[in-house]
Image (cartoon, rainbow, N blue to C red; front, side, top):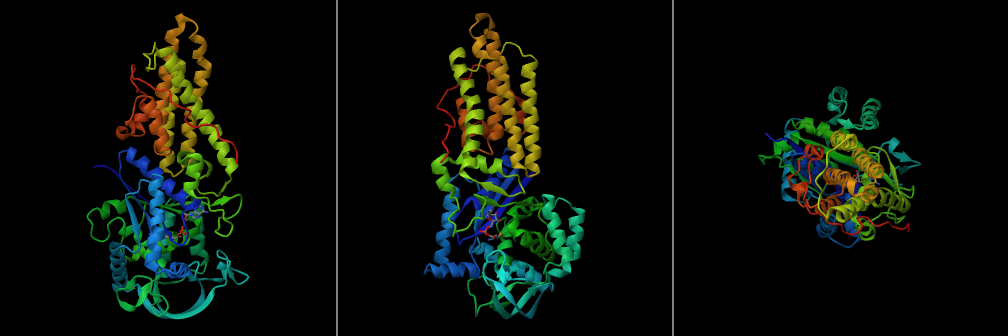
Length: 515
Ligand code: ME8
């Protein structure tokens, strides 16, 4: 039986257009999906948009549109953007989709029937930006810490999910499964929230229709709609086929979530307790990354520093931007985007290091071997060393991808690029080629370089797919990714076969100037 893998991104609010932050999460998910497909796993990649609640109703009103017309437009922008940049999602879910609405109502009925939802009066300070009542900790000088706006005092009768009754169970689960939430700092944060209370109480999961109609109606009270977070989290089940698609069970059993630290509490506390109450198994891991800041400042519409993925593609090519995002953020920590850092990365890693290896390998193969992968003339310790480096890179990439360390996986691939470049420097085939008696050595060197490049391209496939395809095409191995099985094929170090026609091509990544 084949192994399964399922990866999700948050479903993004349709109150802003896609920026560097959304792009990062989506690109990491795409890279993981591509990696696991190449590892032969039955893979399902879910993304989408979160469309209900006050925040969206407010944004629609500001644009003078009905909520559905507004969400159709912005959700379409997200989907088109992901299509434009080649994000390989399997399902793009919208919380306005009929199957999502049915999944939410099914789950609500189940949790209500078993007595985990009751009706109470509540008064508190509500932040529309957060879509929830705030606690003292959420505020600074009377303003919401995240949104820097004054919360509204609200008093309402509402339905509550009796979340607190599951806190002991959740604490024990986090002790028993230490990497359920990773990296560890975020697990510790959730444990601290549970220990200290952190204003965590039973969760208000309804909004009266007298105030908000833009939401999913509660199946047990038509005067209320569902709180947007309770609705949104269920997308992960709905998108995988809950309640009655036969594929649901295997997908859900393999589910990995990917989020930034801003939504740790809903994913680390609300969601596992909701699943427990609904009698469903937990996700495999909650993988939490840090924030991208731009020029050391928080991303915000008012600062105009959102960084559009399509603008980056226009200027640098999407693979270059994708590479930068994956390489420059240590998964779990914050990172800073500056155009200087992007340009430095492109020039150092892609133009000089990788681009140079590609161009010198293929130029010399053209010049000394009629553009065909040469037949090697034996292999010595130096060739063994490059082969070992390839085996090690393939192993390390597999380990880091399974631990959610894409930056380290890339570092491992570039260690192989470095090792191969050092090998070419040491062998100096351009010197050896001056001596007819040493042409066997030249053939061995270039054969080894072509093999190393082949492994490098396969390993880079999930990270920079277009670049990987291009390198493989130049090596006469178009389509090799379709039949590759990582990490084995990259470690095998046995292609392309001698005699394969290669092509020089233009510079893979021309050097770019700082803006
Ligand atoms: O929270 N750095 O949607 P959202 C890194 N609808 N990642 C960032 C980022 C940044 N500066 N800014 C945004 C919501 N992100 C809810 C989610 S899920 C059931 C509901 C990314 O549009 C990151 O993945 O505010 C973050 O968690 C997400 O966008 C928040 O997206």
